Every structure is written in structure tokens, then in C-alpha cells.
Amino acid sequence: MLYSVETKSLTKSFGKVIAVNDISFSVKTGEIFGFLGPNGAGKSTTMMILTTLLKPTSGQALISEFNVMSDAKKVRENIGYVQQETTVDEYLTGRENLLLQAKLNHIPKKEINKRIDDILELIELSDKQNESVVTYSGGMRKRLDIAGGLLHRPKVLFLDEPTVGLDIQTRRKIWEYIKKIHTEFNMTIFLSTHYMEEADRLCDRVGIIDGGKIQVIDSPENLKNAMGNEVISIILDEHKIHDSFLPKLKEIEFVKNITEDGAKLTLFVSNGTQVIPKIFQISSELDVKITTISLTRPTLDDVFLSYTGHEIRDDDSGFNRKREHTKMKGLRS
Image (cartoon, rainbow, N blue to C red):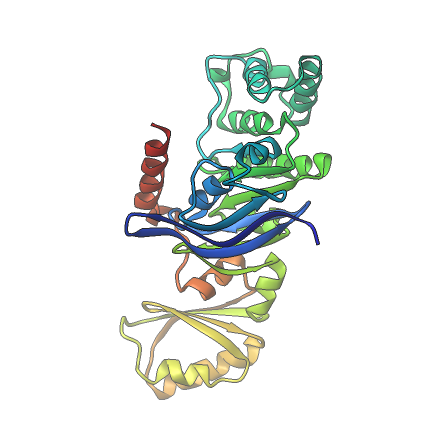
């Protein structure tokens, strides 16, 4: 088995804060691997270590068998890195931005124009190449950003939250381009995201990271199947759950796992139609009032909830995102 990315006991601390906590994983050559977790979970910190922008506190990381510490120059030659924040110069044209990237990456002069033409065609920006980027939409800027990371034909492309801040239609369009890039160049793509649908649609495998630790790694399909065939969501008409209610539910045949979030319970089951009547029977015996109950197929949201005990919410990550950006800004200055 060939691996493009390997980490062994990778750890990064900022003072007393452990951002990345003893993580070990491998990314197969040619796969799209997703790092799934909320902002502040350690995704960007890990990616910065893998792209040589940050030194680990301890542990080891290899990119295409080159060590990120001792072979940093070789690592940079073999990777493309597209940051969360757009880095294109809005006062240059699309083509001028790519020319600048080509020179920074020391691409031979005789190859530059052909490569830029090919990339612009791939991301469907040929007709806008001579217009200032200030006139581009958010999706067009992100496509140009990704194009800049592809010009030197890297073996591994790192995409840090590639669709953050974009509307759902534009986000899905970017997914199409990522799939097209993967097919066209047959390269390994390592992307971080906190969008469940993005990970489900794009990734061959995902690693769920929370609090700096990897909780599980597998294909989205395997992770969902492992939860059980179905998910039962219950909302109770009370804040305090009856002491005997949860233990009784766990005794029901076909119930694989239960997570609790206030008055909401999530049951991962293998036969929902048989479990639901038993839930109502137990609730009646214990005089527990159920407000709503629903039966669905498991999603990656359910997988994340099962492994971490909480959901990913866009609105609870503001502090963590600010902290991450402040950290990066300090590193650049």
C-alpha cells in the first residue's frame, strides 16, 4: 500500500493548549481524504504542520515519504496548498495571478502559458482570465485559488475548508471542480471541512477529529452503516430525563447506541419499526412524555454525534475560528 501522507504520534501545543493531540493516520495515494470536525478541532493546525508552515511539538509527519521537518523543501515541491482565506490579488487579472504563482513555483518559462491555459479551461475561467479579480464572485475566486495550487502539478493537494462562507449552490459547484481535478490529475487530495455533506459527497475516507484527537477513520458509507440501519430521534417534554428511562431504552433489542443532548435523545438502531413501540411502552410505564419522535437513515452528522457526543454547529465555532486565525496571523508576522 502506497501512502501520500503519514503521521505518527503528531502533537502540537500552544502553551498549555494542546491543539493536536498524539494523532496517527495515513492517507492512501490517489484518494480524497477528508478531515472532518468543527472549527478549532485541530484541522488547520494539522494541515499547517503537513504543509511545513508550522513545526510539530513532537511526533513525525511524512509527505510522499519526505519528512516535513528535515525535508521541508522537498515536501513543498510535492504539495499544493489552498488556504481557508482567499489569497488571490484582487487588483490583478485572473491570468496575472496565475503568472505570479507560476513564477513563485519556478515553473519553466516555456511551459507557463500552456499550463495556465489548461488550468483556466479546467476551472472554466478562460473567458474571465483578463478581467480584474475584484469583479469575480466568491466562487470564481476560490476556483482561481485552487488553480494556483495546481499549476506546479503537485502530488498532494491540501484544501483547507475549500467552500467555507460560500452559498450552497456555489459550494456544490466547487465540489464538481474538486472531483474533476481529482480525475484529471489522479492526485491525492487532503481536505478539511466542517460540512458533513461535503465530506460525504467528496471523500473516499474521512477522519473525524474533535478536541485535537482523531475519533475514527473510515469511508463515509462504512461509518454510517456501523451506526445501525436507522436513527430514532426523540425530543422529550421535560428537561430532566427520568433516571430509569435511558437504562431501559438501552435494554431494548436492536438498540446499538444512544446519545443524549438535553431533552433530545438519539438512538442508533437496526430495526426501528420494532424499537419505536417499545419506546412508547417504556415511556408510558415511567410517565415520560415524548414531544416528537422520528425515524431516519443515519448521516455523517449522526456518526459525528455518536463519536463526539455533540453536533457540529456553524454558530458555535466563532471563538475557535477567531483563535485559529489569530494563531495563523501571529505565525505570519
